[in-house]
Image 1 (cartoon, rainbow, N blue to C red):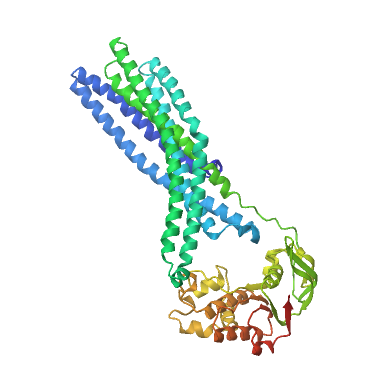
Image 2: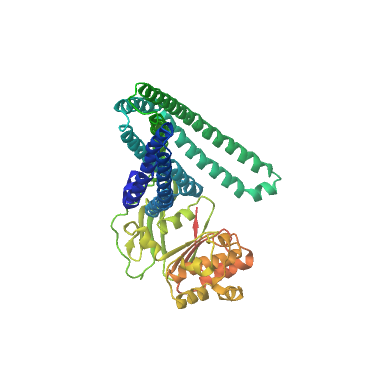
Amino acid sequence: MKKYILRFWKHNLLIFGLLVITNVCLTLVSVVMASSLNALVDLNFTLFFETILANAAIFMVFLFFSYIEINKRSQTKQKMATAIRTDVTKRMEQTSYSNFHTKSVGTYASWLSNDLNTIETVAFDQFYTVLGGMISTFSSIIAMFIFHWSIVLLTLSITILTILLPMVYQKLLSMSSLFVTEESERFLSKVTDTLNGFDTFFSFNLLENITKNTKEASIKLADAKNNRAKVTAKVALLGTFGNILGQLSIMSLTGFLVFQSIVSIGSIMATGELASNVFNTVGNISQQIAAIRSADPIFKKLESIEPSFEKPTEEIKRVESGIFLDNLSYAYGDKVVLNNLDFSFQLGGKYAIVGESGSGKTTLLNILNGKLTDYDGSVQFAGKELSLLSGRELREHILYMDQIPYLFEGTIRENITLDEDFSNEQIHQALKSSYLEDVVRKLPQGIDTNIGDAGRLLSGGQRQRVSLARGLVRGKKIILLDEGTSSLDEKSALEIENQLIKNDELTVLMITHQLRESIRKQLNQVIFLS
């Protein structure tokens, strides 16, 4: 948290200044109230009226700067929260494909949503509360010197005791908070998984599993939160005890000093208010600091995404040759899935890769698109060894299409460009080459028609064409089709496959379990993996 406070130090310095003004105003009110009570005791109406006016003026200043402080605090919190989210997503950009997929998308979403909400409320809000409390305590202690030094001495003694008492639960509170965040992730993952299975439950008349699974996950989350509440209550109880002890002690000491004619009667009102400022802060500060520290594991978790540092690589200036496999082997642990493969995929060629499940078809495509790099043997593309090319460099030339391409909520244009700049001519050519022109022409707003969440307003075949257009607009000439048409109806599947095969500029490698005879005749080679 510290680095984000320092990163936005100018904003936080402004908030500090505003907190100084508002808390000094409240301290002045307490001091002036002593004069008000003394004026009442002395039956001095003029002095009493003047002190009331003075306090009214102080309160106006307090309200004005409080309004500014509240707004600036919110703005700064959101700037820091955005900076954290940006840092997390940058780490996601820099990590490897396999490392990213060690966690579910729901977990990452929970980090950027639930965990950030926790940081805002538990860390940032409490930080500003502690900062304001410390300023209030400091100004109140200085004001106490106006009345008598012994009041300050007693205040400091009880303050130290109040701070030390709750520290016994600090580690326990941190652990309980971490458990809550972990259980929240599991809850979100379980609920997401359950709701995604609605159609399956519906088909088997098991819809009651939605309530059952959600309730079980909710109970576990509730137990974690209740456990944290118990620890928090113990910390709060010890702080409250110190608060009560301090206020009663200061009131007693001030009363004694009044009886000794050392301080005025009005002092008992002022010291009571000032002591309340100090001990309210101190009584809660241990709980607040513990809450701030409980966010440390969350920050560490957000920083746990390991970047993937790719070695300096060769650059593909021009693709003049295809893909060549020489004794290519790959194993998952002790299980060998590819063993000494030797194949050549010429530019412009059309190839089908077939075989039983587990024969390594998808593994081969994952090697070719740079997702898997720890292979044995040699794979050359454009005259360069694949292991010497970065994944980014490789993906500049290769398009990987799976069964269900993901489309974002937005327009067809936005889903093709993905926020990159392309001319209308480039986009039009991509639409033409992917046979999307007729589809776009029939839409109410053409290419700028919103296609809904995950492209739900388009058919499966149309979504595949959008995915193809994404690659074509970027000049990708090598298409890896991983069961890309298996989820489509016969007509749509044939249309997509024919479009790819009849495009002389494309090199196509397609995995399929349903190799149609009309497609087989147009292929350069059918490769069988066993």
